[in-house]
Length: 220
Image (cartoon, rainbow, N blue to C red; front, side, top):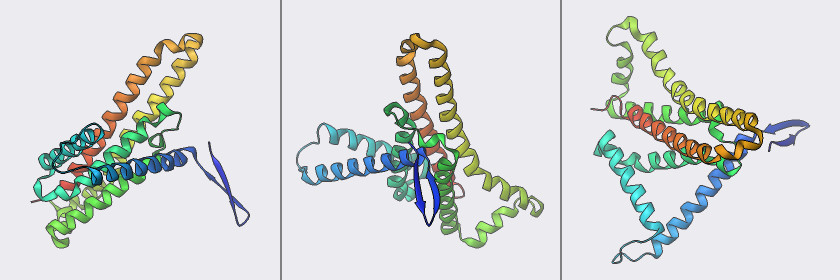
């Protein structure tokens, strides 16, 4: 599902993972708009029901996770963490709907991890001050500075490799199994769907937990 774009005589290929990410983003935006409209129409004196119950449960669960892992002072990160969780989960599960999971592309998930890394560094500098932030790289000894910098820079790489490796390997193993079983491949379809859902949601959860730890590290 790649798309070739010609600009100034040069051909640029938009990979299928990027197209999948755009489709998922548009879908989630539409869902967010629908949720917003339903909330505006809901009456405060009436208990929410159906779809809004699920949304309320999701928001409350994420608020509790952020509060327990990052503290009340970081509750402002809850909307970002929830958005990240839903987006990564949707990307991981998109293969069930005929799309190529964006998270099976290391470049894509690395950019997401890089955004988290930048937010974490900015939050650290704001919370403890730039002088103390820079001094932290020299602890416990000044000779450790290069290693401390490398260790910090390796965080987005390790976070992205974890998701990328699991999603890509899952897709490859499934393809090999379906090819090997031939006409008997439908027999493993239920197991395939279950594992895709389990692994996809688990990896999204792990990525979010690492995000909260990364952003909260160094807080007083």
